[in-house]
Amino acid sequence: MSDDPWLNEAEQRAWRSYLHMQRMLHVRLASRLQRDFDLSGADYEILVNLSEAAGGRMCPSDLLGATQWEKSRLSHHISRMERRGLVTREPSRTGRYPDIQLTDAGRTAIRRAAPAHAAHVRALVVDVLGPERLARFEEDCRAITDALDAEEEPPGSSS
Image (cartoon, rainbow, N blue to C red; front, side, top):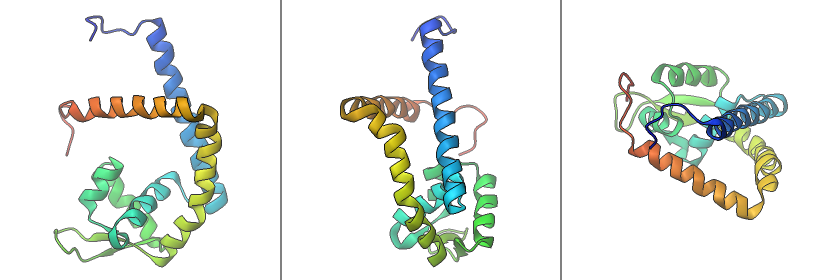
């Protein structure tokens, strides 16, 4: 690691390019989910995690780990999804907090949205990069997440 705390011009361009791409991609994918399926990006993230979990059910701590959200954000968002009939809170099998359960309506919503979402990801990322650059992109993403996993928890953050 460099002793200089500032990014040089090339590093700054790369970082800002990443931030711009990440924001644009997030907004574009989320707006299509909202427009076409009446799901927010956050709804979709929760539905994906639940649909991939055994029995469509997760304890809140596992869902927090999967989403990297704050507890209050998850709780409020689950409440909104519950009012829309996408999820329910069920008595926990192992912990003190209720498990989050995917409903039939939630399963239908994710089954409807997932193919279109995958097609948008393919068009906006996979096809743009092509196989070799996509493999490098995956490798680069893994290197960054490995570094994040190895880093100590920042002071003041809650687990």
